[in-house]
Length: 154
Image 1 (cartoon, one colour):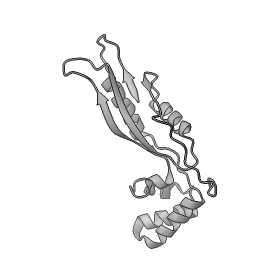
Image 2: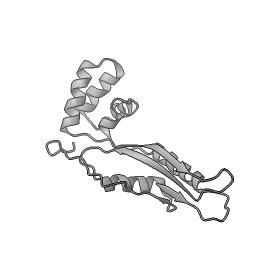
Image 3: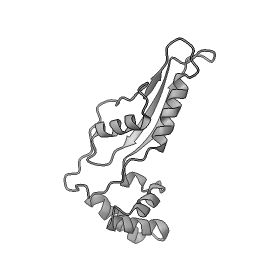
Image 4: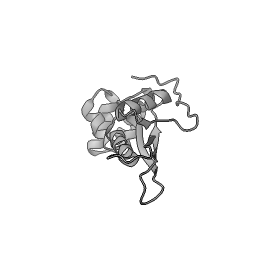
């Protein structure tokens, strides 16, 4: 993602613009998803796990529409990426001198995409969440969506 400014001073700059965009990425939550494979996996792990997380795993496996179970799993680093697409900022590059306005600011965002979700759909969701035409969102390289032909969405 890039935010750019011209050479004329302004009250705002590319770093601030990008920082606001990154806060929106941090706050955005992709929809909860499940398929036969994730439900079977989380249900099996839930049988072996005690406590609130184990209960949430079992409830989610039985009913992926259980919002309370999904919310509990979204706060668990071990399982959040199993129930939805996640995107996190991993790198920043901005400015070129201590006494000059930055001409550009760039952030790298790494996404773990739920199987079957098109890469373009994730990009479009980030663009919508950021809602700033001055921030350019591009996909690096040519990633392909993960396929899971035997585990359609449930």
